[in-house]
Structures are given as C-alpha cells and as structure tokens.
Image 1 (cartoon, one colour):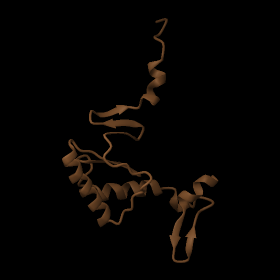
Image 2 (tube, helix red, strand yellow):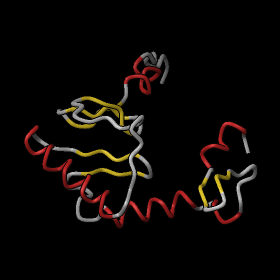
Image 3 (cartoon, rainbow, N blue to C red):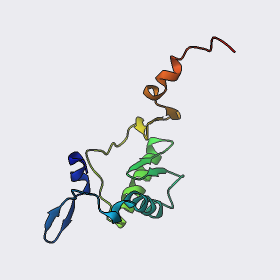
Image 4 (cartoon, rainbow, N blue to C red):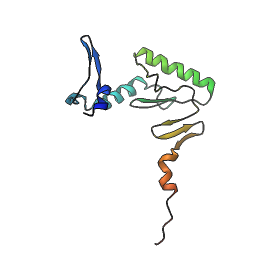
Length: 128
C-alpha cells in the first residue's frame, strides 16, 4: 500500500490507533459497504434533497429558506446514525461548487470546464 494511503486506513480500538501497511482481504469491498450504508441512512432524502455517492453528499434546495430545513434534516439524520462530518471537506451554503467532477449551481448540474476543455478546442474533421 502506498505510504500516503496508510492514514486513510487507520482505525481506533481500545488498545490504540492502528493503520494497515497492506490492505486486508476483507476491506477490498469497503467502498460498496459504505455506499450501501449511505443509501440506507439517507433513503428518505435521496433524490429529493440529497445526492450521495460514497463520501460525497450534496444537499440541494431551491431556495435559502428551504436549504436550512434540508440541512437540519440531514444533520439530524447524521446525528441519529452517529455519522461524523469532516469539517475540512464540508462546505455550507455554497451556491456554486464541484461535486463528483461536475459544477453544481442554482442553474443545475453542468460539466466541469476543466474536463471538457480538450473537446472544446478540438478541430472539426478535415475529411469525410
């Protein structure tokens, strides 16, 4: 396992904090297990006011007043299931942000200009 990834596989027990040097066999599907948990926990909100993919959760609302209610509902759900948020990755009240490589704004979900630059600069075909 790459040294920079070791901290991402750390876990805390009663005996101390540990991290893996080699990914154990049982954790190779941890992403799918986590996605299943997110799907279950936010099942009443997904598609309505939340888009969630593994560790990226986007709370979407049509207006600021509704956003506060949606945010409260999401944080209450997190509290119910004892889900902790990473404050370094959390952005609140943003009207424009990147989510899974796409730009999200009040207008909707748009392609990230960085990702489509090569297509935009492509020359038209010269021959049939």
